[in-house]
Image (tube, rainbow, N blue to C red; front, side, top):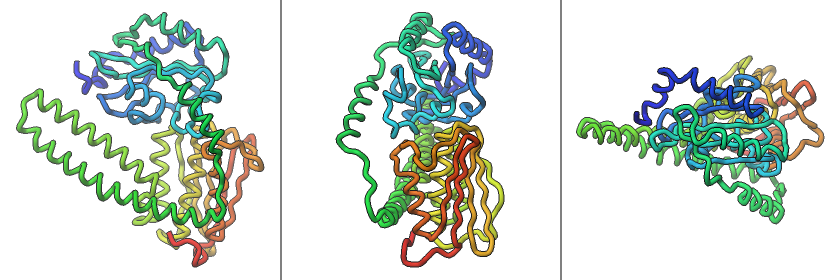
Length: 398
């Protein structure tokens, strides 16, 4: 059986077998959460398909490109990974690289690559929502219990990735080079937007177009090769499609074309769709604006503020739904981003990520003469932006 039809093979009769195996592992070893992620073919994204102990359905919406997230890293490297205390072993600036950690509030985990016919086709994740010195022994017992096999899949349990050494290096680097917020932040923000726009256009109009041309050539080549060559062409075409998807996501992160061509609302909806796939949260929009386009500076800064607010909710709120409301009245734009999650201390927020998000949001609001209010508590968080529909001239052009 080739790797390209692995997902069809699973759907044809392995659903119940895998689901039972996942549930049995959780029961036998006392894990809080166990999940099995599958990829359709080599180089394809991984999705968490089977689970036991999940807090909801959010994890099912996570899609991981190779090299991204726990499953994506395991699939790409073909090596197992283990964190006994996530808060101690992972630099907080790297948390967003592991969306399943947020989706299921994990504190320690062991992830094992699963192979078939010499190819890594799946990832097994076993985790706890607490920290204990006994967890490493539990993971070792899991490996011994599996005996190199899970159902019809071969378990890779040797040569763990050395994340402790990497994490130690990052902590030392953080101590030597702490993050400082520069003065005149508004000028930095304006320069950053210009550079993001330039790089985004180069990715879209340059590299992406070149890859599309190669993809078309491969499709023409398919009719002129034998069956073995056709399989290689098929895999190469899938690789190009995956790279194009990743380039698109990077381009959107940098500066979505929709922001320049279609406006604030279209760009925000497009970015929200990317966040839904990445973090598994459902992002619901309500309301609407009386006009499609307005001042470029306002569109840019409102988009960045809302992008940051939605991202923070996806990463830190521990909730499955995020609500975005858009309205305008008497020349004022009103936007709110609401979650009913765990909340935080808005007066003295805990530093996560780069630690510049809240300050950056406030500075962007200042640039366009807007007010930004962040209210958070045990019932969740509400970020409200109220901005004049005509931004003050001479402060920020794009």
